[in-house]
Length: 537
Picture 1 (cartoon, rainbow, N blue to C red):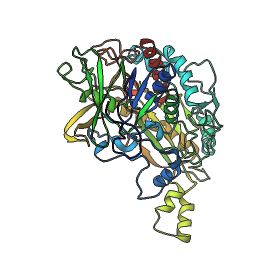
Picture 2 (cartoon, helix red, strand yellow):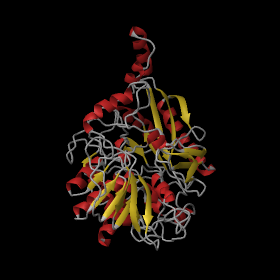
Picture 3 (tube, one colour):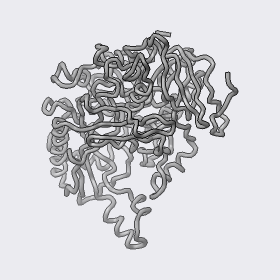
Picture 4 (cartoon, helix red, strand yellow):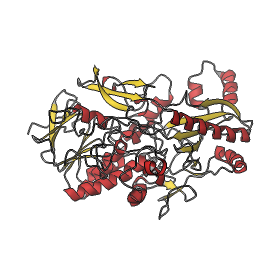
């Protein structure tokens, strides 16, 4: 074995391969972290390879300042050749909301965690669109409960439209915000039901994390640590014996002579060296884009179109959630920005058959400009600035919605050889467009939002409809699960159809995406896959 090296980082951490590994996991976001913890706690030798760095928690306040001060870099060091990409169709802003580092996307997520509905697993059989999952809601039901305990979900049993559950949430729900109370009377008059939002943040100390301190900058950074990040399960995995190697982007996976098993993950370190990590089992947990990209980069004579891609589905069926919104001014105090996350929502229209796509209404707590950010970027000072802040702050109110997008083979992730990353690999190319059905669902959401806002007496100043919509940055579907190896990449347990020791976890395995934030489903599926993987060792 080569002499231990930190890869040229200068932090003293050993980035050479482990001599023995039962499982090599690529990625340390919520999927990879939960699998790593479960397997390490069961006694397996686990190695986690993470492309990004460890972020020091003690610097979170400093990172927050980098976010709120105009002209400063973002808090998570995204951008440059490492994170280059290209896009086509409508265009997809990939780097706007992703993170590479220990903890993955949970470092900057908003923290809303709801279960998919029963209909989401049966879209083809119920509605004749999309595809069915190879599992039903009941198969994931116990893992949803386990995931809620693992993440520390605060919620209430007040949602009449939610799928069935056996037990209450681990933590009590956050109370409705002041702006929620403004919406409540208007919604009651219209017969529209409001209910609480399950959140993966602490209203009280839980699992070694403090209660929410109300910083209000939940996305992209929580300085207090009250919001769950996968760092906690990475730490638990390390305590159980796992080894985590950061700044170690995997370049490709290499298989045996028969193409039946992965033998090695080839990863790079900052000094330009490549290392080879062998293992009995491999798990991809890099997210909806990078899971597909790594498989495509791992082409071989046996798999000329990409590893595990005899179905041709790797990279295809890329889906996201779409945002619909509307807002304006109300002639009374709204106290926007006092809460950095949603406390009320509405699933009443989720299971509507027309349009088939689900939509989830959100009552936003951050509808206007932040007074801090407005003051920092102002060109006026003194009384002029004070008058401007009094006029702009405290009078805005708004609604949002997540809208479902059905899978299409034309929306996909491929490789773009015309542009290379910092290791000379083709960057991901994201081809993404909307169909008419999704646009109609956005219009449907806007119509409901306008009804509520007009009933409330809001002077509507803006609407985000089909022409202005953007993604929620929930990348799904690119290594979809299914019972048919000719139409899917992995089976119901996350094991690839083509290779007997390669597993995939995360939102890339979703056959459809519903309109619910995906992280709780990612966690539940990961725990389910971990059980199957543990049984195979």
